[in-house]
Image (cartoon, rainbow, N blue to C red; front, side):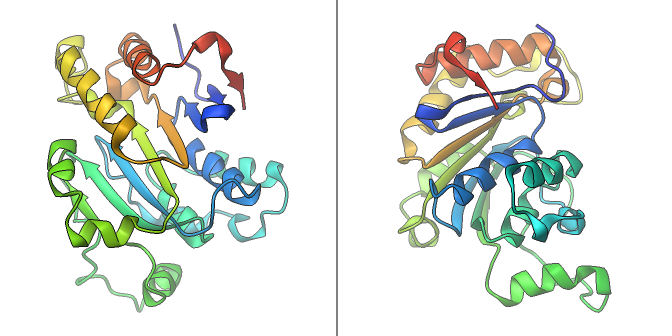
Length: 242
């Protein structure tokens, strides 16, 4: 199967939204908040090979003028696959963030000690930080997060919040720079990780990105999606476009 960039399906009765590219997760989060299915200032658990913590999504035109579903889909379409989290913080949909990512380059997501906030374009970031938004933690893999999920630093980000699981299937690609089937985790480990995520919290919303290129191609993405559907007990034939 070949996944087009605008591929999007959902299982609305399960609050699970799947897209080919990750920027569409923003649209799912906003829809759920704006239709009253999720309280504002939710906590996001982002499980991904990449942090996707680029701030410039805050500059997308129309971000703060969303009134109709068409508006938010237009904004989501202008976002990139690595800058869709900050805009959701800017709209008040997401507040706290827990990153679970093996990305080993770039700055740590909550270290702003060397940022020069005198630059005018960084004012939206500064405003968010000054309002004690975008607070969180970073873990390198799911096992590390699960081992620490009951410590106070985690529970104070979780307690009383609606919880959003944001999963990119490229998390299961051990080495994205060598895009072949052999780089995927062992199947049983993938199933175990998916089972852990399924049972970890009572999720208010689950968004899944296929990211075929970073999974190693459409074949790998289709395989991983099949495992996800199996573990989460989803029948693909019952999915709806969104």
